[in-house]
Length: 137
Image 1: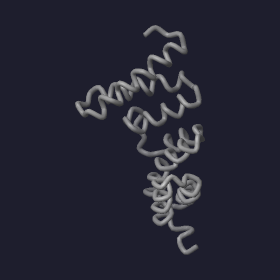
Image 2: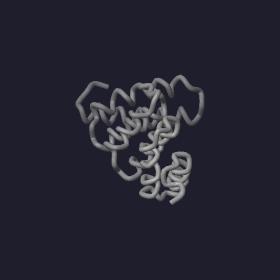
Image 3: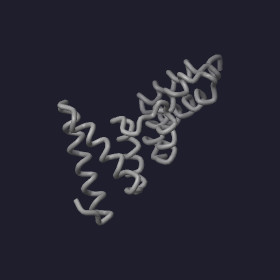
Image 4: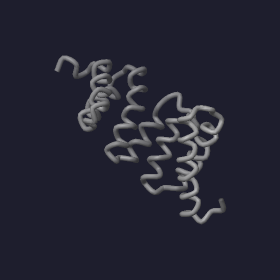
């Protein structure tokens, strides 16, 4: 009760609950942060809320929270990939495709092994989408 309106406490409690996969509890605390006047924690909470909503299969909410993050850069690797994944889960392939293509460019510029694996997975999603949309590969 003491921490109910404290953005710092609610943010970290929300992240803790997210990390132990108690997503509904996490959502409750992170949403309290967005009701505060602390722009720093509100901004951080948007990314966490995007992740939590994705895990809860609330994909439209996930996209909304991710896109509320400032400064949002359209082709910021992980964030854009998670937005694309949300559109993909909604079967909104027209929105997912350009985001995946942008993320693929970022990952292909990296020599990191994890980025290479992610690029391969994204390439498969792009091929799937193009096949679904009957686009040339």
